[in-house]
Image (tube, rainbow, N blue to C red; front, top):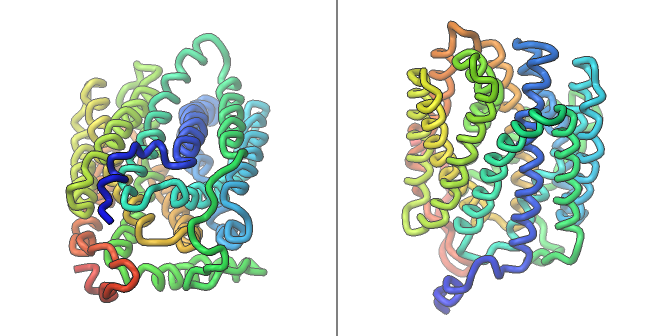
Length: 433
């Protein structure tokens, strides 16, 4: 039958979609608030340097070291229940930040927050498959990306008035409150999985290593091997996955670079960090809306242009000596980044079942976090008043060059439905062009 009737129906009528998007939005709002509050907290108490970058990145270590158990946990439990429990524990940890008075205490709490994120991220990603109408993945993911970016925009806006009339402690309490609300939104009845619960992904579930050496082997040998095994047959997923690593490296760099850039380039503007983060949020919200309206265009072309043109925006940031220009460039970069992100999420979601998607992300996210931590560390070493150009060049190069090298892979069509000939596997050499 034609998909046209489904296209005429509002996507918001899909059971559970509105609740999931609202939950993600509220949770992201709290994360965005502390995304501004924590760097300010660290800069005021401990200054700029390598410790600054490491402290922001330490929350990634749990997923790096323990993320191999996530797939099995989410397989055995309902991803919705995992999301609720992880959000509740996250709220309890967030309220402890204002009571710290030593760097190691902040780092310990960041580590614990990372433990909750380790389960929350893949669980929520898996839930998208339950609430998205088939064939409308880009539209649904465009809405989700929009919601995330709107929250990222509103978060910094909240910070200014709160700090003007209260203390930074209130911001951490706000994250706890939003985490609890996000959990409550998913606590009621929710759509179940569309596939047979007895269905298992082709790749075997990972087992928790019993020694530090086993953890390292799982992370750097077994995980990459198993991940390659499930992506090698689809050139698009292959290219998206490889460039996901370089993308999150840039995310890690930006978590350190943007606060440092605001402090170095515009020291006279106290709230410049908030303005820059809000600019990325504003652009991201617009990009998410735009992505949902670009369903007729090639997703591969949108992904390539989104990343490459965003890299150009970052390069131009070197010449932005006026606040308005810096903000405008980050708005433009945010638009492009959201379009590329929506394409990535939609294409991966459309090519995997829920269980396969959970397995995919459980292997991908720990490896991603290695690159985020590496990016934050590299940025901590690079950022300095006389090295802004080097930092910006590294960000733009890592963002654009891998995309250009893997151009051919992004034009691989989606596999045919069951009963039709499947596309031939794409080797690593072929996908690399």
